[in-house]
Length: 364
Image (cartoon, rainbow, N blue to C red; front, side, top):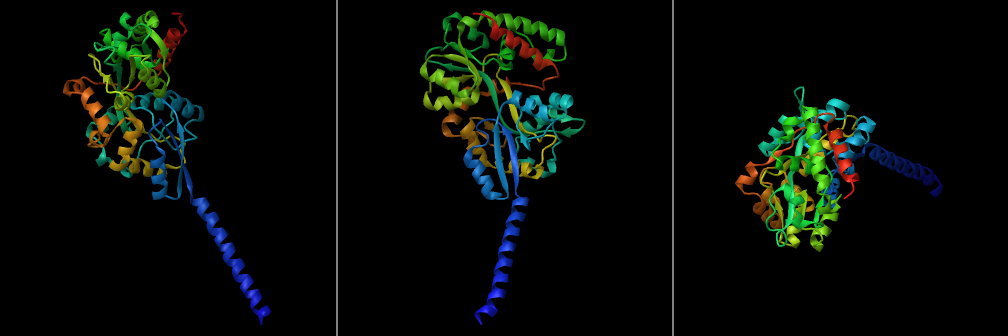
């Protein structure tokens, strides 16, 4: 009797195991990876875990980067290797026009009602090519000065980075922001020269000489927010150019460290969601965009990055200490004086890079 039952039972168990194996294979085949190319703080572990819990068939793989590296990576592969990238809006039109590394955004797959209207207007102005939008906003912020007011109470302009009173106690990031900030401080209009390469080169030459002459003031050129934070908290540096988010986070630890928009206006940026041309997980990318723009998720991202969300009511979603720092830095006049950074035309970034290399190479 047992022998009679044994064959069918064995066959049944074998069939069940085979079916289970097939289900596992099918499930694995359905699972996909969302390869995210982003900035530090924009994809905290807790947010990734919450997303993967909501969408168990999607795994998130994060590569942290910056504007220059993002463009370089996507340019090298023709827009392959990543499914969602987060360049600043100023890096959309020129990069797409020259390299073709992005896809148009399908706005029907995004809940655009959550965005601040001003942010979407910026996408219309700076991320639209031939009638199609190539980005939607994620977070925004500004670049200006970060100052220890207990040591440098009079600082209010980019030119103060070169004030002899702060010799050896200044830091800078050798990137385009310091060039632009100094240009505005000199009474120039750098964005107006973007389509006049000869005129822009003349301005860059003047800025290069100014920043080379300023080198005795510079203790070090910072490369990351952690580096700058250490320098300011230790008192080695009392003034630097910086992202406002770095200042807002440091304000929690030392309320003497504040963000100064400068008398000529802070440089405003918007970091976006942009889909690479050869991305392989568009649907997962749209799910991520909609997920992270929810207020409770945006609050976590603001806490991790210090940036202000591009959603309605975003300042209220920031941690209390950061919210206080934002309100301290930006009165109505400062907000009205923001200098939104436009798209960078082809060739301009190379010109700026050469100027920055000259500054770096020059002896003190």
